[in-house]
Image (cartoon, rainbow, N blue to C red):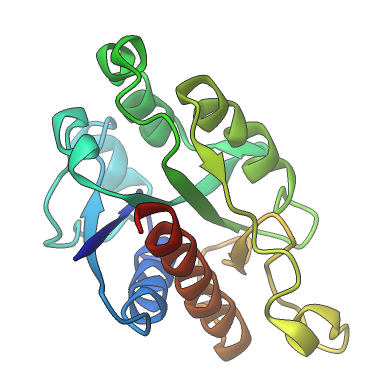
Amino acid sequence: MVKVYIIFYSTYGHIKTMAEAVKKGVEQVEGVEAKIWQVAETLPAEVLEKMHAPPKSDYPIITSKELPEADGFVFGFPTRFGMMAAQMKSFFDTTGQLWQAGALHGKPASMFTSTATQGGGQETTIMTAVTQLTHHGMIFVPAGYAAGGIMFGVKDARGGSPWGAGTLAGPDGSRQPGEDELQQAEILGKGLANVAKKLKA
């Protein structure tokens, strides 16, 4: 079986919900299995409490030693001022030994994100995160316009870009991923799974 790891960080649950949609897409590809992981939280419990963040999900916490087991990856993280959240960056910072060994070289990876507003970094967050993949020699698999008409609608607010699927959380985090955004995430997962399967063949 081809293994795809969906690795996320989520403060308020939006990215977790998107990760579950990505998993649905991955599992549509025959011969590919998906596993969802989360990265470790770096904020103290008292800070999270003041932020009114809900409890963390039950998904296992990944360490860098698990990464070589996978044939492909989908990374999900919210934006922090147009770049990936520090928790995900902290995780990537632990992969130095894998980088030295070239352990992730040639493996495909896609990304998805969440922002408070439409102009809050849906593109720049993923664009600036691609540097992590580049230094590992990984193959970035963008979303492109695989979601078709969803990508062209302008009537309703929605996240996502050619760089990757996305959702809008709203300034107070109260907005949850919409149907179009979840569909984009599912399509992203299916696309990455197809690439991972072809590369392993």
